[in-house]
Every structure is written in structure tokens, then in C-alpha cells.
Length: 346
Image (tube, rainbow, N blue to C red):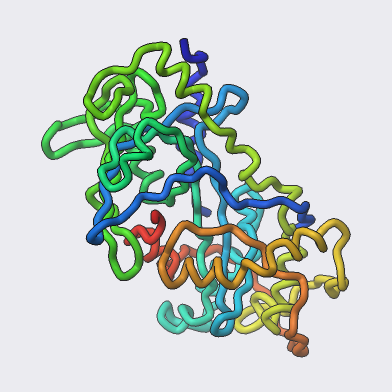
């Protein structure tokens, strides 16, 4: 019989994903044993089941947020968004202040804007039916997805109005007995798969592709295959802090955050040649950063979270400017459009 969990805690975890607003340790964030829908003739339809957390873990998913900025063609600066940890993020602050410095209209500000964080989630899924790759049926995988699918999970938990079903009460889609299958319906587009027709089905116990409800013994077998996720969840002590982000941005890009539109350059010390504890981690991702970032921009495939390399070529002199403190609304940018068009699943 599957291990009982306090499913009520899932609601808080999912609700927290609605908030949008390195002392790096060597660690690989390449997700192993992932499920990637196979497209044939530009389409992929998969019936899957989101699974509860691993018995040793609390949440049934993890979230990472990454800023990726192409400051020159083929050259990228990347960092973790600190707002994930409830901390002020200098990249987000740059965007907030840009729209309140009083120097630009909305249209004039856009070219100076930095990309919003790309948000990626990982969960365990059970593949119920997959005609394009039947060998995956009945197996458990890690599944990486974006904010559009997370919004569907949140709506399922909160309840929603369905044009055919009427008012649908909130439920826990991760529940073995009272959850629901997720129907992944993807159509390839210029910016990546469009998932507008994806949805949760009716609530039902977990079953096989014929609709037969799985026995307790079969559920136990599936539960024993659930993967841990915590190792892919970036921790605060594994990412650059605010000051390091500002220093590395200036050294890599050639000017400081806020310099072009508002305030004097921030009082940050020059970046040392090496920050203790970061050299190995930076070296381990340097080779993959360009390919990962280009894949995100060109095909909107699942994002690989990376850190910017420590070495930088830009050494331009910073011109002093004057600071104002303000808040502003985030505007749509290219990365947002990828998510709305669901350039996320592949």
C-alpha cells in the first residue's frame, strides 16, 4: 500500500509558484531519466499522471528560475533569479527601476530591459498512454515543464469553470486515487510546442492505458520507482548572491546594472579573479552555456539552468550616474512569449 502523505501541504507548495516577482558549489543540474514527448507529423499526445513526492521528500515538484541575457549575438550572461528565495534580485530590480526612472516611454524602455526569469519545474510522472512511443507506457520519469502547465496544476487545485463540465471543484492532481490524468497535447510551432489544448481529464484513480484501475501492489511498484528531485533544486548557498551578480554582470557585459538609465553605479567591489568555491562549478558549465542558451532562444526546448562563466572579456570604464529607488510592473518579453506559446516542452 502506498505511503500516506499529507497532501494538504501540496496546495501551499503549488500556490507559491504563482508569485513572480554564487557562492556556487560544483553540481550538475542536467536532469537524468527525463521524459520528452516525441513529436510525429508535428504533433504529440501523451496521457500521463503526475505522481506524489518521493517518500523522503516534501514537495511533488521543484522549481528553478534563471535569467539568460544575450548581450551580444551568441554571447550570454546567465544567473539564478534570487526572487525564488524571497530575496531582491538585481536583474529584476533593473527592470523595475527602468520603468520608473522617468526617462523613457514604455516602448523606449524595452530595448534596455533584461529578460524575465525563465521558470522551470520538475516532477515525477507515470506514462499512461503514448502512441508515438509506446515503450514509455507504464514507466516513471522525471518531467520538466514550464509555467503554462504549472498554471493548469494550480487551476486544478483551486477549482475552475469548465464550458462542458460546469464548475469543477478543486482537487489534488498528484493524488493516487482522487487525482486526474494529464493529457499533454502539443503542436509544434515556430517558437516551440503549443499546449493550449492540453488539460486534465476527469478525476479517477490511477489506471493503465485500457482504463483498468491499478491494484495496490501495482501502485506500490510505481511508488518504488519515484525519483528524488531535491538534487536538482538550486539552493541559496549554491548560487551567486546579489553582489556577485552585479559584479559579474559588469565584468561580462561591460556596464553596470542601472547605469544606462538611473542612478550612480552601485557600490560593489571589483570582482576577484576567482571567488573561493566557484572555480570548479563555473568551469563545469562554461562549455555548455552557449549551446543551452541558443537552444532556449531558437527552439524553446526545455531550459538548462546554467551560470555565466567567470572569465569575462569586457573591461570598459563605468560612468557614474544617479540612483532612484522605485517599483514597477514587469512587462512581457521574449522569454514570456516563449512560455505563453509554450516553447517549453520537447
